[in-house]
Image 1: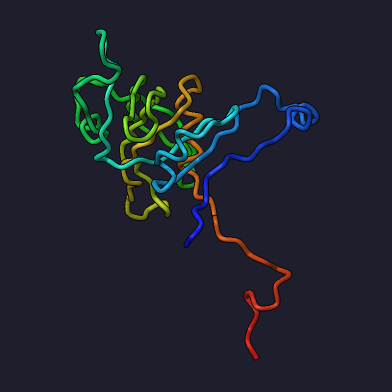
Image 2 (image 1 turned 45 degrees about the vertical axis):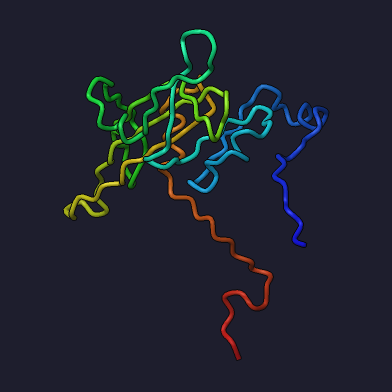
Length: 185
């Protein structure tokens, strides 16, 4: 029988947190599409805001305005928000591709995800493709459009978009290991 691992966020004692001086600071947790799931979004996080890339066909809804039910019957997808002309595009200046660039995005607050976050209110950020050039006279590349779900409803969108545009090297290098990056023989 295979034992199932359970996801549990790291526990830090309040005394240790007070020593660091981070009682009021908010930690931004970035996640790829594999972290946009029920286990992560329903975990009890203390002063952690999640920002995860979500699928374009994710079924989202708003809260029902009447009595008798919590979720509204009408659902929508992030792709439909991208195509919706009634929601205006906003702009934020971010650092991407070696320069400060304007990123266009749409923001929808009060979003509910039945299968993932349950009754927790989320914010959806839909980011338009960002053009950039690697060389001054090179061809223009575009970062693909992105769909982000976040548990933070107060932080400005620019502060949530910037970390997602950075290319962070997730590979680890072990300098002390004899068999890593060493020629054989």
